[in-house]
Length: 587
Image (cartoon, helix red, strand yellow):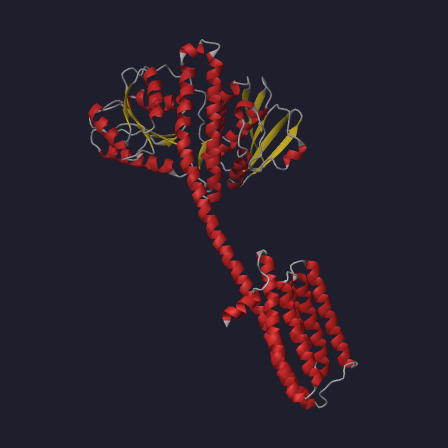
């Protein structure tokens, strides 16, 4: 029985989309229910009135509703929908007249209004259907006041009896409208939830793939970056006019590739909401920006571009901000400025204070940005092609996201003479401390004989870290994981340990903890190198006992400065079983 009914309800739904299928099944349901109601109440009314016209009208209406199902089977779905609406309205006028009842008209209007929304998907057809229903109500109202259809029931008692008999039929149709709406909404909600789960699973898989892929890419890219640095430090390359530009190009390209890989990873972290934590700390703003400018000057040199820093006199010495995110913001703007500024020009990095706000502006001397592109400049994947430093178009999007996280705003102003990006942040000052002033050039340090243990599972990174250190006169010991590194450390007693944070067998954190617990090794200075910058890993490793935290790709100049702290200081020289741990910090 239910199979037959379901088959009738789904008549004409083959080869149609889901929305059209819902409309067809709604028409079929109402036609089927109306056929049953008309058959039952038509016979009942005939039994009470003994009027043949009642039986004829009921028969004609029943045939009409069967015809609507046939129209759907024939693929004439719009005709079936309009036919059903017109049949209901005609029946309403007829029965309202012969029963002399107006109350059921109002109940039927609610049902026909809902049916109009179910039967039709286009607004114009819905409006026409509702207009037909409204006209029907007006006709019934007019017939009630000025009868033009003679009622069959003359007495009030007869009218009341049949009115209560007819009323359940209208209520059944009203309930059917509500039930179908509820069924369709629950089905849509279920599909939405299922789709949401699928999208969440896909997003998790995508982010996992991006993290794994980025980790795999960073290994060889780090090695290429270190190779380029090694080449630039090589005297033969420095003195060879044909090799030096190639080494600089390799350095620029590898540095850019690393930034783009980091941007893609940041994008996935933004989508996952795992990069939104703010880690505020005191920061010497002048020295911080000067150091950033020096880092990016290597890339700028390839275009003979100079990076100039300008600081307002009343700029505080120390501010409170998230150092990592502020570095990414400023770094991305410098990369963008270097990319588009003219050859042999200047990029200006300026910091100033205005009305309790900190402003950092980066200005280039390029040809400017077309006005029509300014509105989309911060959208993801918006980029321009530019030789060696073409990017993915994520840098400015990520920059704006970080600026917003820090409670600020970013604006761009562009003319034919250049473009200026201005970041505006809340100014939070720390207790004034003497900023690190100009220091005399440090004396050259002889690392000859210094013993350095390198715990790194990437063979290429091992090789070029060792080459750099050996060029400085160090003796190096190599281990592929933390466990092997501990064995070497106990055997060779190095002066300094360099540890990768992610290694097989024993992680960087576990390696550091074992070193700090070992009576003969706990005094050793430990420098961590890692590809993670926003996972809270730096704090975790520094708390575990690391002295310095460097991010990949390792900048040899930064590594050299870190080594200077511990290998040039008497406190860092071997002392028998005496734990010496200089203050931990992140670089």
